[in-house]
Image 1 (cartoon, rainbow, N blue to C red):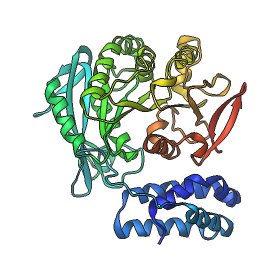
Image 2 (tube, helix red, strand yellow):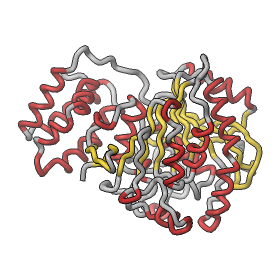
Image 3 (cartoon, rainbow, N blue to C red):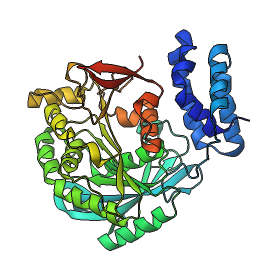
Image 4 (cartoon, helix red, strand yellow):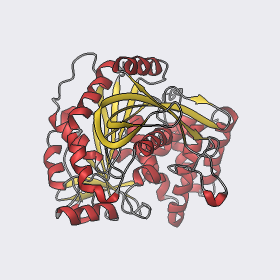
Length: 421
């Protein structure tokens, strides 16, 4: 029997050879394969055996591709160790859904919540900490946040069908650290994934997106969120711009708490849209030295960054020694960033085409060729191809030349990557 990890590694290491033998069916097979690989990672026991067989059955009609895969599996040695977990730290499997905590820091002002939960508004407040319990229904569509729909006669949240925030609890800094350490202590991996949302996002939606992203990436460490005071209103764009800059020292404090006191080995950072201003400016202000006992920064992901492209490129010169890898996802079909450019006059770092940012310290990936939704701005959490690529970045730190589905490109002598059309 072919072991699941060996199969996945064989595909990742030899995708160009395998895909080249698929001919005109490549795009169709690649789309189906990504879904099957996700299913393989979610299952265990007999279901996992069936998932392996499904992948083999998918490729078997293509003799050359099938033989290339089998040879690649045979070439893998020694046998890959199989990890435990596959879900965020603190998860509990319920009846047809999985529930787990999202640890958060925020400098939003508190607001009245429902029941025992608290809530936060779009106004500025003091830096505070807490934990939200979120559930994800079994086998949701990757990247899709399920909500009740009135036209389906769904008027209440059902954890078996919808992503549900069950509670939001405020904690003192000491209790926050203690609870995070306890949760991470029982995790398969001593890692933290911190998500930073963008413009036009309320606190509840930020919690949901952080949870969905950790779940879709099969992140085995602790899921975390930093939520700055976005007012969640389209006309308040300039207010959000002011607030995200105001939040930087508070985010820096939150990140220090996470790195120094959670007991983690590494911390990954993922920012979307305007949240990248918070991330980029914080990274630029950091010193590269990391004292003993402080978690290293590992994978840094800039998704559709709404930050001045020239500013990003200048600040990227300081990134090099501060983390293991920096990955930028950009698109020329991002309507939200086109609107931002119209406001600011200058290109945004999340745009591609002639304005694509290519820097020595950053792996730039042009996602224009994939389906990036109506506005083309939330592909980091909605598109299967991007999620699959990000999975290998955050899970294994896999460089772009070893991630299948990407092809190398050059701009002014510098290398970047693009999704295959």
